[in-house]
Amino acid sequence: MAKQKIKFLIVDDLEGNLLVLDGLLRREGLELLKARSGPEALELLLIHEVALAIVDVQMPGMNGFELAELMRGTERTRRVPIMFVTAGAVDTQRRFRGYEAGAVDFLFKPIEPHILQSKAEVFFELACQRDELRAAAEENARLLADSRRNEEELLRIRDELAMANISLEAKVQERTARLRETITELEHFSYTITHDMRAPLRAMQGFGQMLVEESGQSLSPQAQDYLNRITTSANRMDKLITDSLNYSKVLQHEFELQPVDARKLLLGIVESYPNLQPPQAQITLDPAIPVLLANEAGLTQCFSNLLGNAVKFMKPGVTPTINVRSEAKGDCVRLWFEDNGIGIAKRHQEQIFRMFQRVSRDYEGTGIGLALVRKVVERMRGRVGVESEEGKGSRFWLEFKVCR
Ligand code: ADP
Image 1 (spheres, rainbow, N blue to C red):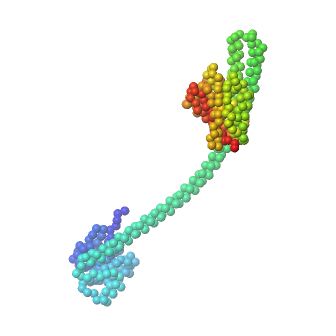
Image 2 (cartoon, helix red, strand yellow):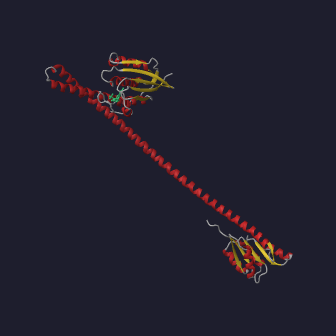
């Protein structure tokens, strides 16, 4: 905002005196209002706010004192400081009258320029400071009003947000409940379907088997080949259904965590599967494999899948050699399943833990095993991963809390 000029009023009936005062007082930031009589001065005072009135005492008509008295009588001009200009000495009585009328000072003619200027300077400075204070007060009031408005606006927004939040939460809860319901229905649905598909499949497997046994020899080689393909497909389908069923069971199952002797469990698995024993495979178990905080059924699924894969993904003619090693990691332990198989390229190492992801199509499989392992491990609050290079064997690992 442009700074307002400070205004002084000079009142004198003689044009020459007005000119002299004008010449002496003129300065930047100051506007001089000139009046040639008391009434003219009062008119100007009605319009302008002045910081000082310099008033000649001897004027025809209304003299300076009379003008001052009128100014004192009006609220608007009551506090305007008045400096009287008078010729020659002023007797005490007149001086009293002047002070009573509101004079702050007397100047004597002939006027001493530097006295006038330094006195006027005091009033000019005072007026400047008063204007600055007034501007600061106005600015403060404006800021205060702004901050009140902001505060009100903030309160309004806070209330709106609270309302929005409440309705959002209600919506999220409702949708979550609906989603849960849908998921449960879907799980139930897929479990029922896969379960019910087994009966006709078993019939296909059984009748195929009977056909091979009873009339296998009398069939043409081509018919025998067709029959083999039918039973192989039925077996594959059976495996797919078993794996899917296991997976959906895991989704619905809560795994209670308890101490499990992992080494003992591994030994039991190796002993129950001939393909994990010599001469078909060499499996070494680290004697330091500790007792884990996990779930026995869950761990059995993980171990048999990892060991099954380790012996399966081999180059033809190579004897699977598997080392199960344990590595302490703070209050956890990492079990490594290291094999000498075909390995897995880096780019496939993430995807193999997802459903139906198979990298090596030359081997039998459903692509569910590792997805199942990951799910089960997560349910047991553990972790799973793999390190491998194509052609250089794989090192799958499982990590669980150790029981102390
Ligand atoms: P599946 O064994 O039924 O194919 P998995 O989910 O167990 O399904 O494994 C997914 C894929 O990960 C496999 O098809 C194979 O390409 C790869 N894989 C798993 N284990 C090994 C392993 N020990 N060595 C090499 N590749 C493996």
